[in-house]
Image 1 (cartoon, one colour):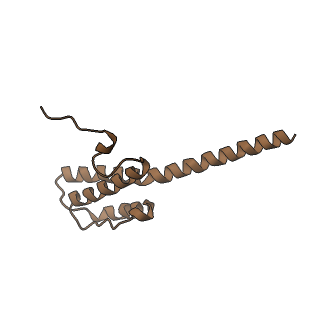
Image 2 (cartoon, rainbow, N blue to C red):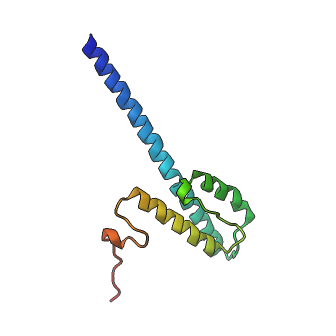
Image 3 (spheres, rainbow, N blue to C red):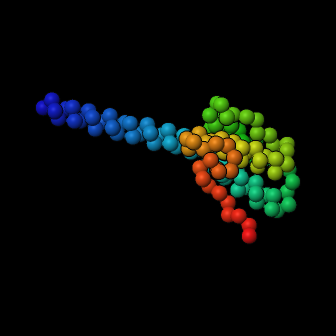
Length: 120
């Protein structure tokens, strides 16, 4: 009977550990997904000829700021050009991805062997 209780406890602990890991993974991926969605919308605005970030983007930037880890939190202004905000978002995204991938440094990924093809 003690073995059955111990096995049951181990299963329960494993399930709780899996749930915690899933929550942590979702929490880590949330800012990346928010940035991806913002970048997509900003790119569409830019392609449509808009120059400045519309004020309607502010709530989404505030949501992103609250989702970012404390050490990556920065002001994401709306009174800038779309290109400027996109550059800031790419910097934040790169920092987030560097945290997720040990050994990856800031930049274009060359540290991990990812290289662009050379022009001929």
